[in-house]
Image 1 (cartoon, rainbow, N blue to C red):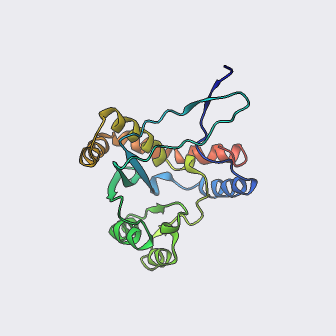
Image 2: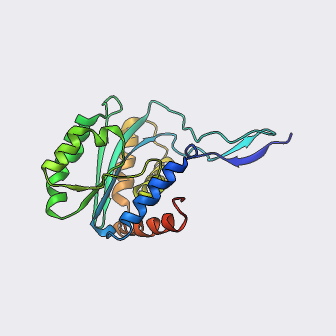
Image 3: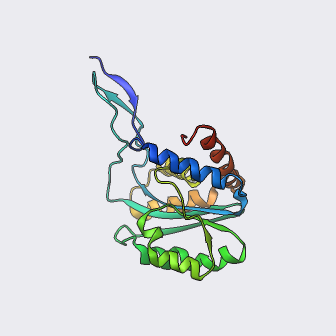
Length: 218
């Protein structure tokens, strides 16, 4: 019938300006030790996380975006990883993630640790993260943080690779209820090898080098 198997897109095509910002960021941070950094991000995990990336496309058709079916049984998690460090928090799906909840639940408990250990806090440019109140909080508490993370650059964040592992392992456990889903996430997170996490964190330098070599591309 003329159909072809194609890989779904992960994100929309980025612009030339995105590439310039990513290149400028990589050049700035490639010389900073990744061992000082704490990488963070949110992720939604559901009972149907293993959606195939390949898609059958009709003649003259194009692959669509990678869209996951949104079943009610899903939870939002927030992870933080660093060399010798990891932390996992849960957000209820009915709990609005805004600047206030992000500051109280994530930034406040970690501020003293980040400052006292001379770490650098990484968060992307999502509005709940970089709201004025949160920037003022970080400045007031003398927390060093990356304030120029380039948009549409998940490949630079080592924790994104960790999310893929968690999705795959949780899906293999086939949880049915929200309680089972949370229990599976906690189990998978606890079983992650810290040495593997450390390698992912330290790979940030190589990721920046590749971006510089490829003039802003992945």
